[in-house]
Image (cartoon, one colour):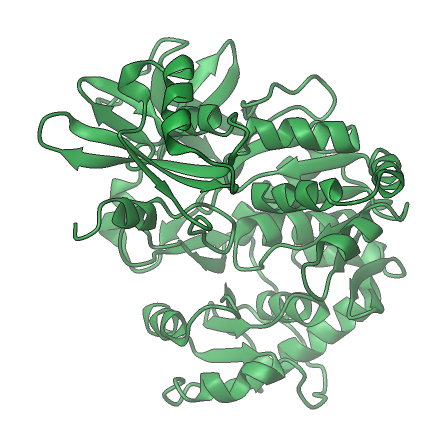
Length: 492
């Protein structure tokens, strides 16, 4: 029996899920996932790693479906309900999906592209429970698709053992317990939502509450209710909460701040957290957001400490059970204080890219270190992300510049609400620095250029500046730098 299921039996009467205003116990989750697993089995004894796609809105039905797939011996392939139909078509073909589970509102649209693959509602007719297979932890459990910003999306395959390692590392490091209650506002086709929030909560016997839709006021009401102990989000959400708080009357601000201070932990991840946002949120809530580092292929690898001091702009130290190295372009370890690509090894690292043997081989060194493509500096054991080697490291005139570092400086200007920095190809310099800015009405570009000259050396100052209404982002709030490059360098 899978450890996640076994543990749930010890918390049978605890509230596992709150969604759509209704509470569901662990026993209900066990019973309904068992029944739905019987539906998926359809009279067979074991799905034998058959890929089951599911397009289910966040909430109890999502978790029930995911658990049912695992309990029936299938590989869960969660897909984004808000994604265009073309992305679902790609996944259906790439993963050779054998059944598709949908929330009722998605059934008709998915049937139009299913090509004969059975489409099942996540609210099926009752099925008699059958005996479920015994699942070996080394079996493949899930395929998550990467964002595909540098090519076609790749299916990241994790085993049950990989997922368990990712969960247990975090539940220990972040002191999860059955007394915890967390609000989920994250999409559930990414590790951040699936593992860090939902699976960690359910492993611990805690309660995971789903909001029907994101709304700053409603979210702050729940976070300050005295019932919620943890919150995890992307930087964009914290930015929106800060802006909402700043729009309120002083008495309302004070009440919210007092409520937030009572929570035990707040985490930010999936994108770089601007130091300005960290500082404002600390003033509002009394919490220094815990920044951590991870990705689809590895779960979480590095984290700021739960109890000790957290350093703004840094992601902390390797989590227990995770080994981390920083290397140069020749895969040699760099000296402390020098930039290097992050390599990771550990039991939480993924098994393979689905049906992409060559891509899998290229992703690892000869001695099995996973190459993240992210560049960091080790400051006396405390890691700081410099950027993504392919997009955030700008090579200009012999310098290797960090786009993230320049962005932090630009956000210090009173008229800049947010920004994105990229390198644009240039014949003379190799690349030149370019910036897209989200600014207020008082923005004066000439004065801004004068201000930059007092904050940055000449070789770091953006040569191209573009004011835009908003930055292009993916579902997890990450700025899509390739889209920025197209906007700043049209026709290329």
